[in-house]
Image 1 (tube, rainbow, N blue to C red):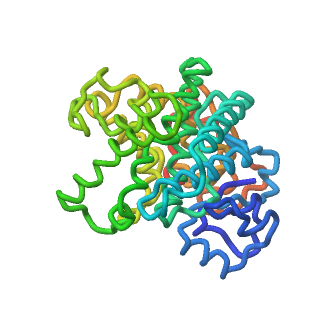
Image 2 (image 1 turned 120 degrees about the horizontal axis):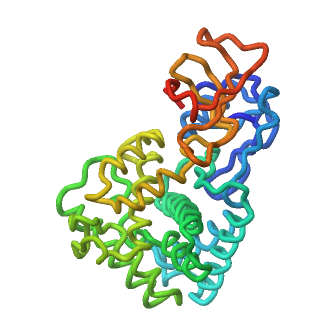
Amino acid sequence: MIIVPTTQCQPGMRIGKAILSEQGRVMIGYGVELTQFMIRKLVLMGLDFLYIEDRETDDITIEESIHEETRALLRIVLSKIFSKFSATSSLHGSSNTAEISTLLFEGITRVIEDMRKGRHNLVSLTTLNMVPATTLEQHFCQNAIHVCVYATKLGMLHGYSQKELTELGLGALLHDVGNIQLPAKLLLSRTKLTASEFVEIQKHTELGFHMLKEDMGIPLLTAICALQHHERINGSGYPHNLQGTQIHEYARWIGMLDSYDAMTHPRAYRNSIAPHYALEILYANAGTLFDIKKVTEFRNKVAIFPVGQGVKLSTGELGVVCRHNTHIPSRPVVRVLTNERGEKIKSPFEIDLSSSLHVMIDLI
């Protein structure tokens, strides 16, 4: 199986993994043959990549960070939170906080269990074949799950205890919960925010803190993550212009990861950027906006080119990432499938980019 940019897919290719809506419903099932109409539709929907069946890569196993059942449970509880607390909900929804709290702890416990069973000691990108968020609720759920996955895995690799992983995971999952009490038109605006609109947006940190502290029955540190995730170590963040270690360690992780996720996923007002460029931006701001030790740890542990990802090399050859080098995750092993003229190679071969330093990945 190979991960292919949707714009490069051809009619007749078969789906290697079901395409899901943001709600987790199957839109196109496994093994379905793509048509030109389907490809155009998926491009218009903003789906950047597809899992495609491929004989030359059928031995490559693409391992998800968490099980789909776990992801579905997180979507359920996040939807309940949105329904109960959003600015447009009536009588604050029908779910009680005890039910929501129980589901939150169950969800985070499953995330931790899934990741402990994973084979790789790397932070992997989240699901690629999912329709991008278009509504405030979809954006809230998608961003929450992405940041939760990154943060929990990094916390695990960092050596946090079960209790600490639960606190960090919940903080990551709920870091932007205050946004759901803001007007959707403000958060989904396609134009640059005015000064007064930006002040309004900034209120989501304190709104989230009070929601979590007073209503949700979860650890105080989770609420502090919601309050502090936009603080920056040079004091330029908000709401309290905290500096350095005045910002809780969990919030420093989450602030960095939230920024990375924002850059690598499209927003109403801009397109996404490639993961390796986003990582460069994080590193350029390490020591000023972000904790340099945490950026370095993320850089050393994130698999920015996931197994199965189709890539173009600086040699002009096309291939697929077949495995990671845990000591240099940004330099994977690539199975070369076509030559520089785009012709299929009769005997595909593998190139280890950790030892072939003159070869670069030019294009995802």
